[in-house]
Amino acid sequence: MTSRKKADDTVTASTGNALGDLGLISSDEDILKVEIARAISNILTRYKLSQVEAAQLMLIDQPKVSKIVRGRLKDFSSERLMDYLMLLGCDIDIRITRREKAKRGRLTVAAAA
Image 1: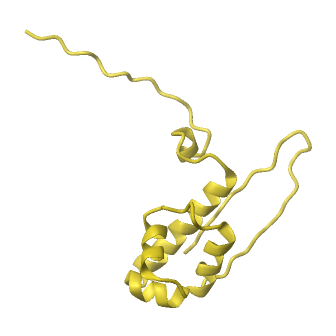
Image 2: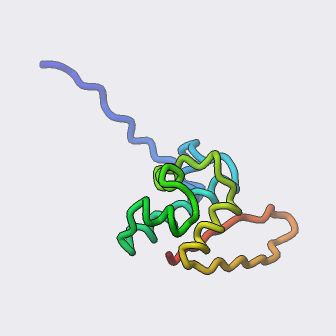
């Protein structure tokens, strides 16, 4: 009979940012870019747009659309990604509210696209 090592069943509470908890996203800018890229990908899926068709609408080439869809975002600013969303026919609303003085503000993205 062989013995097996028991799996580690340790549970760690999330901060609310699963990617950050995994060490994959390091900044608010990164989180924003990921959420915008996700919205772009959702639009392509919803409207059954090929990457070539999306590239034409976004005024870029297909390899850049591929980078966005695959989450390769280091070459894109959040402003540039927002511009692509607008070229795809999306409105972007930015709301700024005041938090308690003792706390740092937070970035929240709610995408309906």
